[in-house]
Length: 424
Image 1 (cartoon, rainbow, N blue to C red):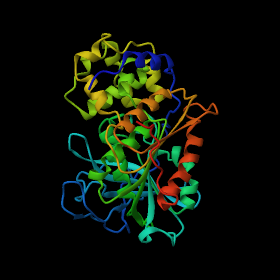
Image 2: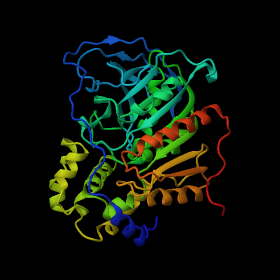
Image 3: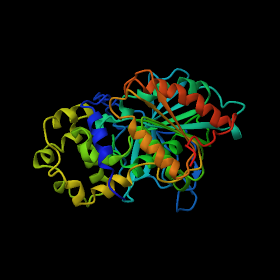
Image 4: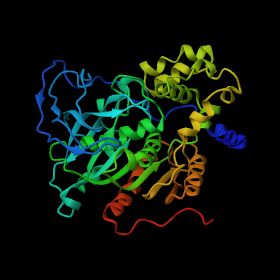
């Protein structure tokens, strides 16, 4: 693809912020210290993985003690999204639901079978009488930036976006949130690599659907904010082939990370080094020394030892890019463009919500995204928040608007919105 327009880069880089609005907890894993465990009561599931025959997954393991994040030497057979183990989190983080920490199978971009962790909220109430097929509607969440290191995995200290979902629990929806590949489990997290994020998001929904009392159905909503907005859009793009059993009713992307060339060409050094480290994780063949300065390369390991705030501190004052035109001399433009969401048409409606006062993801970026999505033929609605909330704070009103939007999508009353794109 052609390079991003230089004028766009100037506008955005002048607006880019010097600090991260979200950090992560470095609290220790609450899984305990011993290695004993019990077999679960979760029932086997039968699902059709993309490109494979229908396979019955084995029963998962109810994990009661030990290191929850220690991946089994041999992953269970079955399709991606197979639940490996689950562990109750107490106290629950949302009233009226049981909070579970989960581990499940997925697949890396190079095609390696991997384990991914996450969190699930299973309503305590029975499946609503009005539920389609006597199964719960499923909402799967892609979380915002926490960092790349294992201790930044949201499931280690569940909260974040899940704290905004009391109404979905009251509605009887099953909620899943992935940690993403490499957060909490072996390997480096492919930060802002869309295919990896999307697979983790969708496979979390599959895994959560077989938890006790979960009764996950085939109606799926996909949501995310910031990095999660990027991950949600990618999950939507790959859902027809990755998890074809799901009917995606709608996708919400709040302040979505997009226009990856902006990060490449002039974004804050902390975001840049996490993105490049993520690209290296997904594409081992790339040579970061052709892009980063020796000083930045010396700081690269900071992404494995600290969360977002620590990475920004570690890289502070370091010039990350070796040459002003380094992006033009390798695979960087192609890799950046390949991770931009919105270039393909999807069947479900999409809601973008973005604060005009966003101090991390400039609002102009979602306008570029919407233009691309409209050109591809998507049904997109973009709402701008005018009340002055910055990036982190705006997640609260964004989700407050997204939840009733999903209620309409799940019920199909009113019908799905018509095209919000400008007339051509």
